[in-house]
Image 1: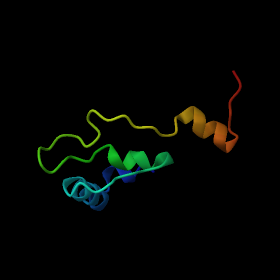
Image 2: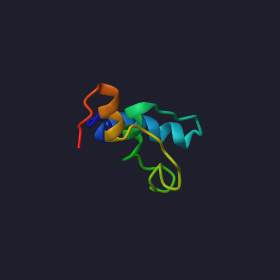
Image 3: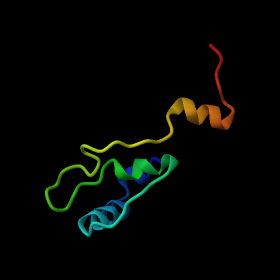
Length: 70
């Protein structure tokens, strides 16, 4: 998942989709791929002013059965 945020091909593809007003979606950890995308028309962050959802670390641990007891 960590490589998604810095993948230049993915960032360009997403920026192109945004520029062409095509739908962009991501699920689960995929939202990480949207974080460092800049809009082509003005250079602003693609996610600026938008609400995103994804897995928190706590949810990830619960899903994998790695819950830690306090």
